[in-house]
Length: 291
Image (cartoon, rainbow, N blue to C red; front, top):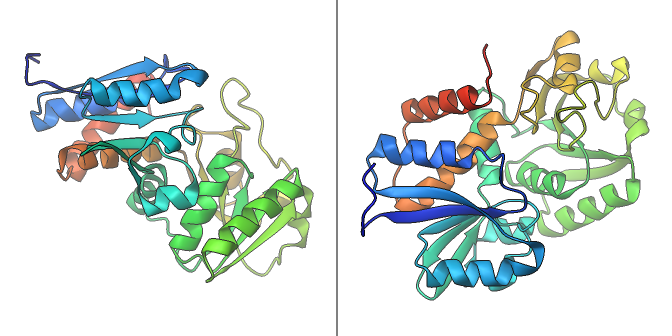
């Protein structure tokens, strides 16, 4: 592309950022859409978040993505925050507005769009949510937002699961959310099958033989599994779901769509599914995935 005085700059702030796939997504989209825009990752130390946000605005950056560990830390330095991001308590996209950035969370809409693209649904489902960290909290909010029938939050520390359940039920009055210790999955009724969402880092490369729950009988309860991890491309959790007759997907499309939604917010455009699949292909090439 021809970089000139009219080129818009977007970027990513996080720590670390060396292995991010976001430039593949956004520079690929700019090329496809013929937009005069470049996307660059910026490593920001944990004590420099305020300076990074204010500096980006002063430098006329068109928009930013935010990744770990800054997704909550940026919030005090925003002009406005979208309701969903406020509920989740985490922001991953900053959109330039008059006087400052507005914060959005496109992770959860991205997960929703990814699941829809693979014909998974949350509405009316009984959901088992594995984990009680920041990602699990966001997924719990999404489940309530999307009208899950019930959500069971399973975690090693039941206190963390209880904290998420309380926060979520304080915001969403419809649906039920139940905290449980991980090993208490045996208490879940056997007469129905569940959608299981894996929201921990267990099983992430290089620990590819790990899963939060390895017991085979757990997977007899699961008709579909969603792992937020995408490296490895098929996690141990996914292979266990499949071995017990369920279907499973990883988090690569979630990463794709959260980026696409951010790009749409920055540029007031709608990205076609055809272009989305072209970008997904580029992401797989970057990860050296051959199916």
